[in-house]
Image (tube, rainbow, N blue to C red; front, side, top):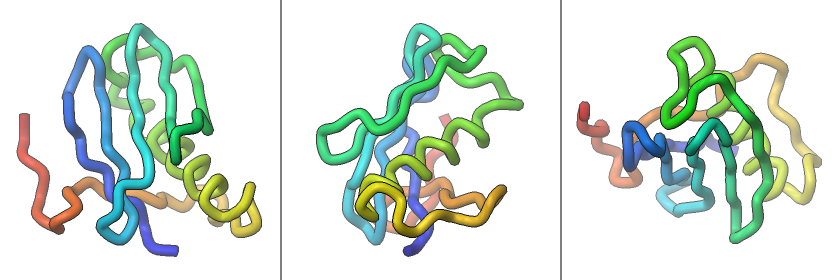
Length: 104
């Protein structure tokens, strides 16, 4: 499975991302009021309570986005039949068209 592409649609309050795989939107991630949720195909597949409130703290963003992508991957692959290697980043920032995201 290819890496997920995260399109940051809002930088803070809430920090949120549309999640794409091979150009198709497959999920949504949002951190609002200290609660991070990940949805895939209309279902919540992951939630956590990071230290950040309306946006992640710098030292936690990568961890929680990767965990959210793992949860989406597991949901798409029938509840975890194929798991990524420990520590493997399974996302990259970008837009579904392949262009680089704008710096807000």
